[in-house]
Amino acid sequence: MKRDVVKQAPTRFDAMKLAERGGRVAGEVDPVRLQRLAERVVQPSDADPARIQWSIVGGWDAQGRPALTLSLDGMLFVICQRCLRPLTVTVAQQTELLLARDEAELARLDVDEQEVILAAAPIDSLTLVEDELLLSLPFAPCHAMDTCVAAAPPVSTPRDAPSPFARLAGLKAGSRSRS
Image (cartoon, rainbow, N blue to C red; front, side, top):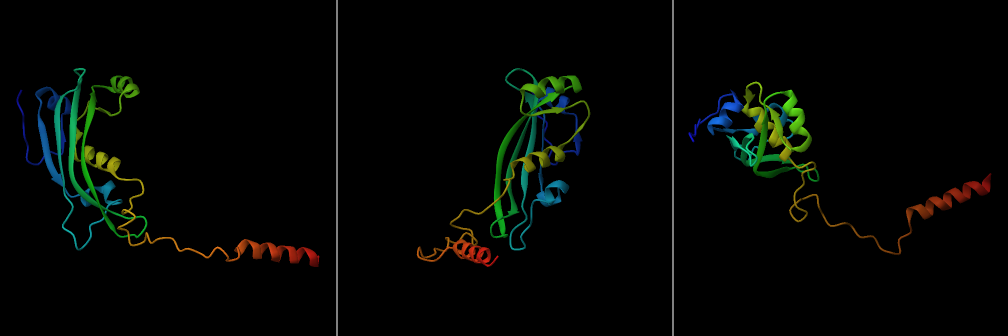
């Protein structure tokens, strides 16, 4: 099996050919430079630029169907939803993407499989990388409670303090007696 290695992947590639020959494309990307991802990530001024190493390896799944294995490794910065400061998110994942030759095969495979992509036309490598990075981001990123500056312990109130609702009830009762 021949393995093709490209230092910086071409923008577009033929996924079926890559799978058939067991080829590999790889590269590195700054997440801030990916258009859709740029809306969700930041680059702190005091940190080195975030870098994501990625590779796409062609091959076959366990059932002998053409597939790509997309690997991501690196880190990116997002905003903590508690303190609004940068938070580092580590990305280290591998995803298997089944390849469909046409729309009919895509529809058939999509019913039973998690990740299926249409490989009838050349595929953009950075679009695949960006899609997987978007899926890997936490929905509401937050620092751990013990490290977040906004996650202070709750302020305790004395048990004998009157409830603000009790005062409101008293005001309501007073307005009824005047009517």
